[in-house]
Image (cartoon, rainbow, N blue to C red; front, side):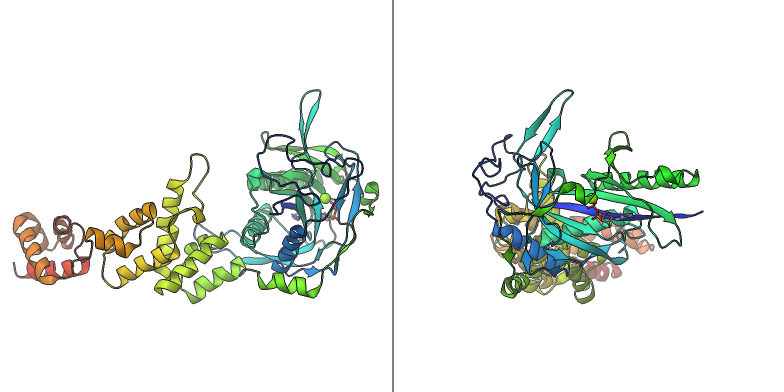
Amino acid sequence: MQYEAVIGLEVHVQLKTVTKIFSRVPYTYGAPVNTLIDPVVLSLPGTLPVINKAAIDKMITMGLMFDCRIADICKWDRKNYWYPDSPKNYQISQYDQPLCIGGQVEVELPGSGRNVMGEHKFVELTRIHLEEDPGKLTHFKDYSLIDDNRTGVALAEIVTEPCLRSSDEAVAFLKALVINLSSAGVSDCDMEKGQLRCDANVSVRPVGDSTFGIRTEMKNLNSFSNVKAAIEYEIKRQVRLCQEGKKQEIVQETRRWNADKGYSISMRSKEDSHDYRYFPDPDLMPVKVDEAWKADLKEKLPERPYDRQRRYMDELGLPYTAASVLIQSLEFGDFFDRAVAVSGKAKECANFIVNDLMRELAAAGAEGEGSLPLHQCRLTPNHIGELVQLIDQGTISKQIAQDIFSEMFAEGKMPSLIVQEKGLKQENNSEELEKICAEVIAADAVAVEKFKSGNEKAINAFKGPIMKATRGKANPQVVDELLRKLLAQQ
Ligand code: ADP
Ligand code: MG
């Protein structure tokens, strides 16, 4: 019997707000333990929560990005549970009326090879609701420590329909979330900083069945590779139980993934929603979400990343690889668009950004910090646009452009200024160049013989010395033509 997997994800995304969701405490990653707290965060007697409007803004933006229906009111419920990660013993969340309902996320599945575009597919969302993050517990042998820095941070929970069918689809969905949410400024989605965490629900069923099997849930998977491995392990485990006639051993439960050892173990049987005694939070008024508020945020919505990818490929003729690199962040896409506006040359601008600029940014990044962020470097789209224009007009060679690139990256000078200061204008004057070509030919009789006996590549032997004599400024096309003319006369 063949089995297929059915997967639904619940993804927690930390919203990019300056302060926490119900208090005025700013949140910064990596602050000393228990310093980002105040009486509201700790729920001291007499304190009341006050909603941070920015959190609702980010949620609505996310809902618009994914074509969700946005509820008319943003209503709050208490999810009651007793666990030391919550000082209140309940979490403020949304139960029966999530802010965003339905919607879908466009996902690119892995291609058949590197640099091959994969199939695009829409993943259906059930809902997205707003809630507060609990604190962080660190467990030791016979005690645990509580850090309330994260307590009360604004969190969105994105729930998908059980419409995913493989671990690859699940990972592709998460990657699509990351580029969409970071482009919209909703979340930085840095998994290493816990800004995106995923629970994976997995069941299996015989191929062709329309009913779902019993699902298990793996909590808090915090990297793409953990998501992939945990899902694959669980699919195998369930299929094996089915094949061995032990289907009844698959029970609805929460399992903990052990990333080091590569297996999961049962943590607890799954709680039902009635266990949480949800009820509307009497401390918070529902917030009305009117049309004007939504319209204002819709206006500010950026182009969706995969729409941008299509525009770059279909309208600007970019190859898939460059287009998919440029859509990874709004910053790079916008930078590229502006460079193209200056020069009118899309492919050339994309090349400089995807190859040269990204290489320089990687080299300039602080140790262990990754690349230098684009907005911190001194290059502007005007630099790239002008550089491309200088090549296009024949003012400089591509080779010289490479040298100029490093210098303009380091110093922020415009390329035309560097050309002027250093006298880097390309030598197009064929009279001058012809003299140099003739000298170089005269100095290398061996290469002349080789070329004349039919070895086409021997012509390259002259080009190095010519570039050296002109300090790289000779127009390569003019040089090639001159060499062929002179060699024909030999
Ligand atoms: P809870 O919040 O109690 O975990 P939900 O009903 O909200 O439960 O479902 C959570 C997730 O489980 C959703 O992403 C949903 O798509 C997924 N899911 C539901 N049933 C199944 C199933 N039989 N197999 C796999 N995933 C499932
Ligand atoms: Mg769940």
